[in-house]
Structures are given as structure tokens and as C-alpha cells.
Picture (cartoon, one colour):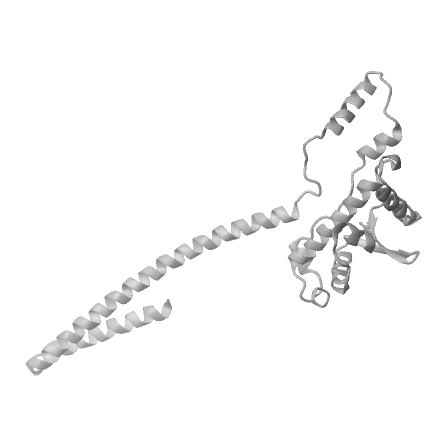
Length: 248
């Protein structure tokens, strides 16, 4: 923009110089020279007008771009706010089972027979999941640890682990007698892997991730797990020939 303005100023200076020369020596300049100078002045004047029009158009476009930049910045801040404050559990419609539980609570308050403690406790237990990684957290991970892994890829790993945790603990929280043979075997395996350190906690092992998400736990996925440990989303518990990934 400044270069165009300088060029316009240059043309104006040339026009002024030519006009002064004509005023000083018009009597001594031949008629054909006068005509040529007049043509040059006209040409320079037209070019100057075109340049001024172009400069004005560029100024208008610059104003529009600045307005778009402000709109983009506003949307970016809104998205970042949503990412940071996204709820762990989205609200869902009440299922008939929950409605039945609510009725049972009301009837208990009215003096009816209470629901067995084990069934009530299992039905009301929430399954914990990891929160997504925020942009500031991702930017705080050392570059040697991130490598070429992107922000979206790391949060995809969060969703993968969350899916495995939810699938596992939906089985764990069901009464054993209500499970089919395959789920009973899974339930038994889950219980065998529990230790004193995992009591009351939510964890998965590599086999859970493979079974419930079909994601291969390879070297690249191990890098993602290292980054999640760095961000304090989970920790490793080793023992009994396997590694447990426990949510924090």
C-alpha cells in the first residue's frame, strides 16, 4: 500500500515539474513539442487517477479483511472456551429404567419396601471418563514428546480410551446372573485384574482397548499414552504381567 502511495506522489511531482517548465518556457518550445508535452501530461494524469482509484479500492478491501479478522477471532475464542469447558457427561433423556428407579425411591419414601442396596448402588454409579486435552495443555507438552502427533489425534486417543472404559464398566456394574457367557468371562477377567490400588478407580488394559475399540496398541499409541500421562489424565500401574491405565 505504501509503495502505491509513493508512486502516486512521484507522478504528481512529475506533473508539477512539467507544468512549471511549460510556464517558464512556453514561448521557446516548438508547437510539436508543446503537443507532445500536453499528451504526456494527459497520460500521466490518467495513470495517476487509475492509481488513486486502485489505492482507494485496496483500502476498502483492507477494512473488510480487518472486519473478517475480528469475526474470526471472536469465533476462535468461543470455540476455545467450549473446548476448555466441555462437560464430561452430556445430559441424556431419562430412560424407562431410570424412571422406574425414581418411582422406587418415591415409594421407599412413602414406606414401601426399599430396593436392595447392591442393585441401587450399581444402578446409580457413574462411569468416570477423561476430559479432553485443552489447547494450552497440548502446547505445554514438550516437542520431543509430541513429535508429529496433532492436537486432534491426541484427543482421538482420549475418546478411544473413554469408549473402552465405558464398555468395560457397563459390564462390571451389571449383576453377573444377567450376563451372557461371553460377558461373564469378561467380567471374571476384569475382577481378576483388580488390586488394592485400583479399588474404587477406573482402569483399562491393552486387551480392553483392543476388544472394545479395535484400536491397535502399538508404539504410536504408546506415545499418545505418554502424552496423556504428562497431562495428568491417567497413570500406569504395573503388576501381574500387565499394565493398567488408571484414570485420574
